Length: 310
Image (cartoon, rainbow, N blue to C red; front, top):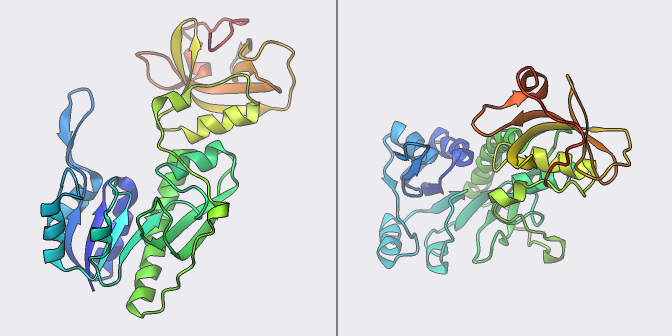
């Protein structure tokens, strides 16, 4: 079987490795262009490109995969299958029709739930207990194609988006391995998605990390987990942006205005919410590194009775 692989971030690397391990002939890897990264704005390769170059695989980085010239180039490669994992560009109908076995996608949710760009973040933000991987035949919609295989896992009660990402990218590769085996044997199932069960996981941006203290302690706790490591949750403390990296829901009530700092001690910052108290355990102030509150208060003060977010 001859394949073209399309993928960009860390999440896609284990899936590319599976193609290599399975001895599939990789005609080329398509990934996003190099981008400036960090304070020095040094050009940085996508993780998938780095991995492909280790194995001497040809890498192509079109600005727009839909461009006529690039579509013609893909046709000339004549792949049996195109495997797409977190690529970051929409494929045209013309591209979808190129490979004999179709275009296969590895998606980090149990479809039809959490279609879209950021399922890993949103399952945690929404307090889901389980998630997983779905492989599917791609169509022109956003994660709407017929499903092939699914694998479900439990989400840890304190698990962050970063930790869940690292588990799901490995699982994604394993489900892809099983999917490719079935396709080779012409035994791959096709299950139509029930659109009535669908929900969306839109792309994350920095504003989504803003903490609304008028929400429940549990909702805020989930937001903090679901935005860790990116875009990270934050609130305002005396006009400064305070990033919040870790918290705990306390089984206590408060009559104070939501966002009020009730107490500060070695355990953290106790903050009132709509329905109770959230304990902030790890923070990051501007220009400083992440640190536990017990470390931060050794040389800095957090005043009680201040209302966060104002």
